[in-house]
Amino acid sequence: MTGYGVGEAATPAGRLIVEIRAVNHRFLDVRVRAPRELVDLVPFSEQLARERLARGRIEIGMRLDGGSGSPITLDVARARAAYGALCALRDELAPASEVPLSLLSVVPDLFVSSSEQQRDALRVAFRACFDLALSALDKMRRDEGRALADDLRARLASVRRGADAIATRVPAIVEGYQKRLKQRVGRLLGEGVHLDAGRLEQETALLADRADVSEELTRLSSHCSQYEALLDHGDAVGRRLDFLLQEMVREVNTIGSKAQDAEVAHLVVDVKSELERMREQVQNVE
Image (cartoon, rainbow, N blue to C red; front, top):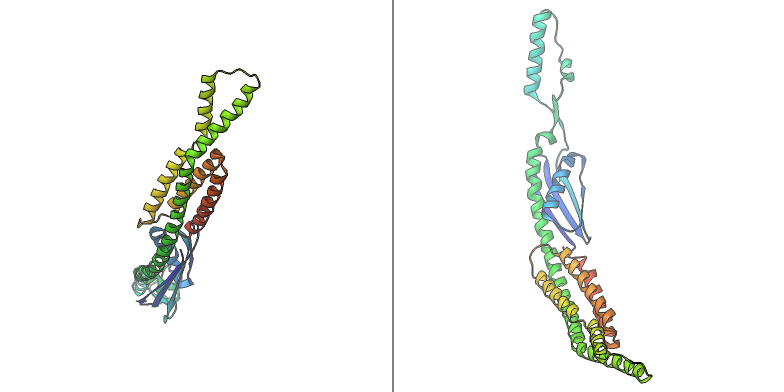
């Protein structure tokens, strides 16, 4: 489902702004855009998104407004310790020599950027911004989800009506199938072919049973009930809905192939059309 949310928070480096956009996608695809001074937050933002979201193409953008960038600052305590150690070495080896401050330039990790010093503060601020943005995005997605659920319920009711119409037709299908078989066999017997009447009745009943779609209709009804229950579920159900629709299509295809009845064939086409529209909609459901 689609949605948009934004969150803001004040930090020592400036005002942090986080935007989250979501568009329809079958799986979860997280993409993050961040300026150089916030690049350390990219893995953290991806982790939060995967923990809180289940489906959709998610775009996360972040920026700092009103900050002064990432100025380089001196770790004064480290510099004093390093210079003191150099002076102690000078006093031991060459007491009269000078110890230039330029020697400190080769000391590792003596200069640090403000972003490194403020990393923890930025992570805390980012989480707060992310939560605000996600709350706004979820509200938009819930509103869209309610509209999708209403549409899916209406289409599910249409599928149920089609299944009920097929069920009403089933006894006539079986009876007609038995009648046609007996007529054909009667013509054969009329031509002088001798068959065991008991065995003939048994085979006729067996073939007629193969045209019975009661089991498929029962499973289709069960899938519809599960589907309706998932529509009232609060968690991410898009993939489960998609799976149930695949099973419904499977049952309807079997009904069409077994029934061999013109009226049922028309009903099957209508039901499959409705199921296909539902599958298209379900791709938008988290």
